[in-house]
Image 1 (tube, rainbow over the protein chains, first blue to last red):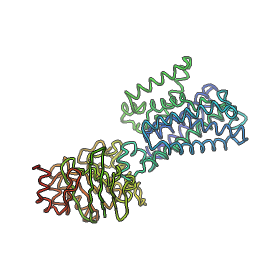
Image 2 (cartoon, chains in turn green, yellow; image 1 turned 45 degrees about the vertical axis):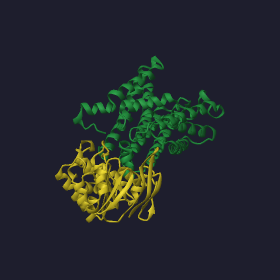
Image 3 (spheres, rainbow over the protein chains, first blue to last red; image 1 turned 90 degrees about the vertical axis):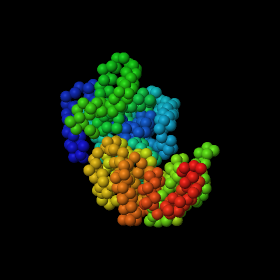
Image 4 (cartoon, each protein chain N blue to C red; image 1 turned 30 degrees about the vertical axis):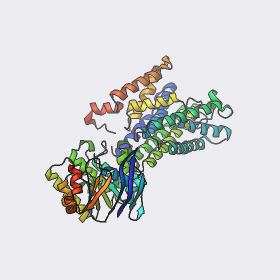
Length: 309
Length: 236
């Protein structure tokens, strides 16, 4: 897909989205907003998992870092929400750089295990540092723009989503993106051609973490209440399912996956925690029978329609 | 140009390479031969940084490069091909070569696509530029491997059995290409090969390894007449 076509599609789609607050009731608008948050999460996770083959379990944790950094700074230090979000994004990115530097030399399963551990440590700290985070009670934080309006926050999340998608698109179509794919295809051959594999991975990890921080921070201000559910493994696996079911390593896959699963989960909400189980099973089945996800199936059945990216 | 000093590589208790010393003069094609398991690929891996030699030194253009990471050694000017080709399957030929172009020590001013396309044309893959690498046949994969190595702009090219599986016409073409690299590009070539006719008629010097040790070094004529080499290949 050419740059031009990408931007045309992106802005047409977001133009259509801009009409949504006029036609949707508040509940449905909420579902769309949650979907947008997940698009930001899944698309940025796809950047590392789909394009460099590094399965990190700390993506929700980085969203948590963004949300709590911004939340605490606005509540305790009186910062504006916008500055809070920027600081939260930056903090997540810098933490990502650190974690990446420490554990990306290992790669593979070790990366997954280390990020899993990191994620749990963070959740435990947030739960227990009651004085600062108010633990599982949740921290009440101000909205992005007061007085609170769902429609306004919808537009802010839409802007965040656009930003995330443009960043991801630009990266995967840059020299860095070429290196990402080389590393994923054959690490040893990539090294032999001068690719600094560690630097490529750490960079991808830091950018992806910063984007997760951005998503978490904005989402927190939309909810006005941040709890340890944001940096939880539940959320992590939800994001993972979305990316895998939508199509790992394709640009549109995580977008489709996020909307599909968020909307679906509203319908099966009545079954409580079982919906996570259902998604897990669907994700497993997809990984086994259609590893390219929905996008892969679309490509298979509509080869002529140009569904490539 | 490239110098190895008493290179030794042990895997557990087994010395795959022991005390191998050699010197490659600039601008020559130097063959590396020896029976299976002689340590040829191990020597390549030790030079290219795929693993660190247990002891000994590798000196390239007067500087020690022993134990540097593969990507840094590549940027110093040593490129290699693999015995079993390792293309980036899911990427087009152009992108395969592009990876080498964008990671050069001297960044290109023109778009990488142009430089990559030039290199593909040079090895005869101009028409396959937009084809995914997994769709290539064996010979084309070998050419692609060569193109990627060349696109890093090396001064030393290490070839690991590039002629394996080719028919005699294709061998002729490949040998012409390698000669051209020496004569027109001024490359030094270090070349592992089992196709004896080709390497004996192309290389100016030959190094023979056997059981991890350097058996001898000399011109192709000297090597062909040496009793030790004949024994190493044919046994007593």
